[in-house]
Length: 234
Image (cartoon, rainbow, N blue to C red; front, side):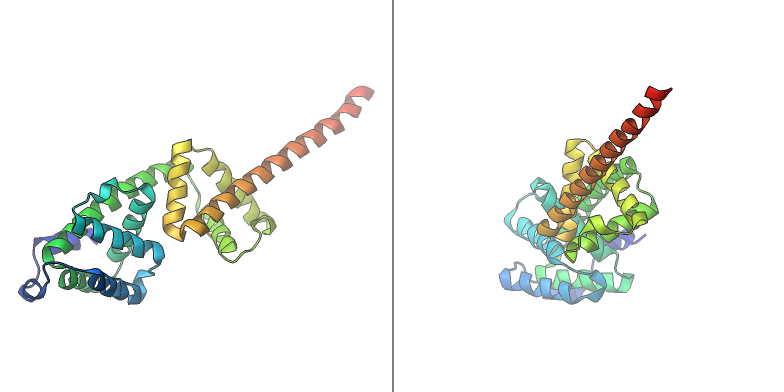
């Protein structure tokens, strides 16, 4: 399991890293680290991951508890750290050594520990929501298609009937969650896609659900009207 590498790294690192690590860091140092993260192709880095890492570094430097950040920020931190752990073991080790050489050993380790803690907390919360949603593989694929539509400015209501049906099922499940769980799901959209795109995705889900309800209601009315003449002649 990749998290085991974090445990190994927390137990110690090379003497050269310890000797060369600075005791404090500034905006230029953080900017350098963010540039390295952005350049790592395997990370699929984005603005939200960058904001998450930048926030947890600033919190560590300022002596603030990152667990007191908003849910959106904690989602961003969790997403960023998860992507680092998903690198192949060699790239993961190299990336963490970059943290140590730029931030200093102790502060880098503190960032790793806090980020890992937040990541597991957010993953557990998301697993709970995913279990309640119970999305099938086909529904998850349809949801990915919805996100692409939103990102490219396409109308999600004009999909092929099969995909449209699955998206409607997604929308119904998400909007059937309790209000606080809907808010958590919306925060996840924000962390994953950015606030603007995340909001558009959530609004698209709402529109699709409302459209489906309107069609269902109209179909029910039409069905009842068709039944009335038959009842009158019987």
